[in-house]
Amino acid sequence: MFIALERLINLDEGYRRSFQVAGRSLLLLVVEGQPVLLENRCPHQGAPLHDASLQGRVLRCARHGVEFDLRSGQALNAQCAGLSLLHTAYDGDRIGVDL
Image (tube, rainbow, N blue to C red; front, side):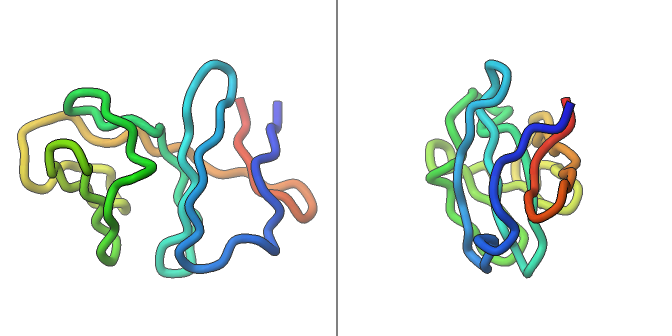
């Protein structure tokens, strides 16, 4: 089932917004012109990532400084699980997720 999150026209570089979908907190970002959808939760200790800093395609958790590669989801500077990246889906002029 497709769940719309945002209109494509609103997805400019630097876009960042969190959404509640089916009991999960998701974070939609636009990085280097590409949308990235992930769970809004650091796998290190569960901190929300909506306030994380972003440098290029590296997302840095504000709570403990764990850095993640947004291409692969892998942690770069810590031994912890990777990010839960989700595939985006499209319907007309909307981006969303299929659940």
